[in-house]
Amino acid sequence: MPYLNGYTAPEPLQEEEYHASTPREGYDLNFCYPVPEERLETKGGVRIVPLTPSLHGARLFQLFSAGPDGFRWLPYGPFPSYAAFLTLLELARRDSGTLLFAVYDLALEFDDGVEEDFEVEAAGGLREERIAGIVGVLKSVPANRMTEIGHLHIPAPFQRTHVLTHSISLVLSWLLDAPSPSMPSALGLRRVQWFANASNTPSIRAAERLGLAKEGEHLAWERTLPPAKDGIGLPAFLQGKRREDELKRGSGRHSSVLAMGWDRWEEGGRDKVRGLVEREVKVRKAREVPGLLPA
Picture 1 (cartoon, rainbow, N blue to C red):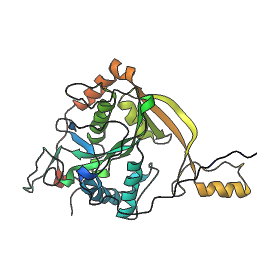
Picture 2 (cartoon, one colour; picture 1 turned 60 degrees about the horizontal axis):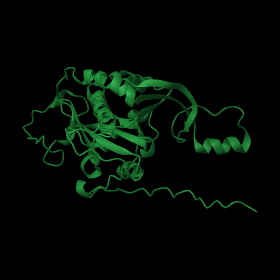
Picture 3 (spheres, rainbow, N blue to C red; picture 1 turned 180 degrees about the vertical axis):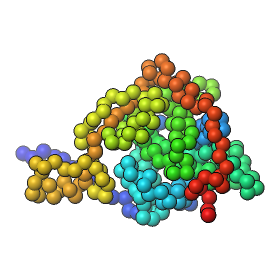
Picture 4 (cartoon, one colour; picture 1 turned 90 degrees about the vertical axis):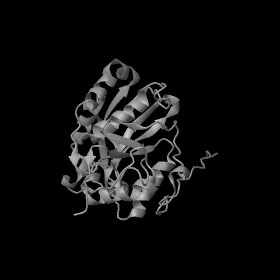
């Protein structure tokens, strides 16, 4: 008698401009942990806010399209259209273990006379030229009190600045600090992990600089990459139809994994991150940042 297995793979999401005009209050983040209601920002450094396509999508697409090399280590992109980019954001939104943040760089100076309201980040508040990329969490498992930092994409005008360090510091504090009067939405998780392509040395070094400990240096064939992405070539033993089938699935990736446990956070991790954030932030004039403003 055969076993019953009624599983069917979900249909691919149709490419559309999802939530291109949905206001923030109508955009369901669909996240499995409580979403931070407090303002997440470092003094004079960055502010991170849950990503809303109608507020952040167009500027992010513009930035990412101007620097397609920024997708080298990501399993998606570059995107041929705005609809393709918004479809990726919608796929992330539908995964309840994922939450994306838009990053604002607060250390830019503008001399065009346009006023900003730093109390809000929507229209009439922070100007869109401050949008500095995406950081996020994924693979969240509430039953295990853990999550993973990922979807990191800081475009060229904001690389080699304070932006990534400050952004991740805010994410780590929200994830690992216990709830308190000043931060009641803090989650107090037990584990935050960080996966990187084993060949992506800058990502691994960034995680180590932030205090995460390397737990595995070479997780062989940890994931499959889309056919359009360069990865580890298929092994020689694959021949014939099996090789053809695997080529259609894509190349592979060896990974490194790093993590911060709640004990490591309490025993020096928090202080290490705070020390990085307390360093002086270099203020930049926006008109002098290559690729930031229209020529």
